Length: 139
Image (cartoon, rainbow, N blue to C red; front, top):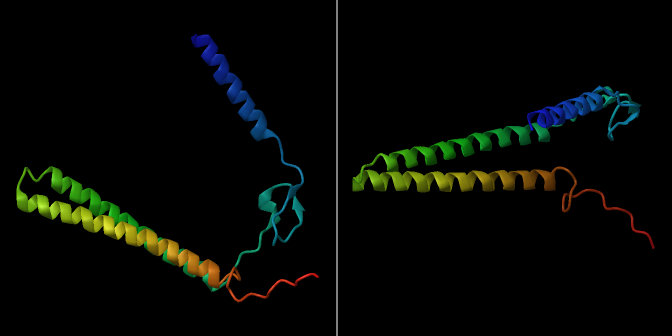
């Protein structure tokens, strides 16, 4: 049984080595690239979007992510307080309130993330209702 497992593992390693060692030929570069075709995706030289909106979006997402992380830490601390309350009604109530506030904070962070991304993608990328130029109609 051990020999069979070793053979399967060896075959998998050999397959992985062969697949990763083969060079990629004529990669189709994504839209907006400086080069239309290249040997690797890194050679396409994709132009970066230097507008302000993606930067603002990234900053807001990081802030909301940190707030979500803080909410999870508050929930964990409330759980630890609840477990270590030893039946004291005051500590138990405080722990339950802490867990509740943490859950509310987490829900608010998730909703804020969704709303911010929706607003930025809708109004600043020419999406639906974004005020972009309408497509020509054919008759």
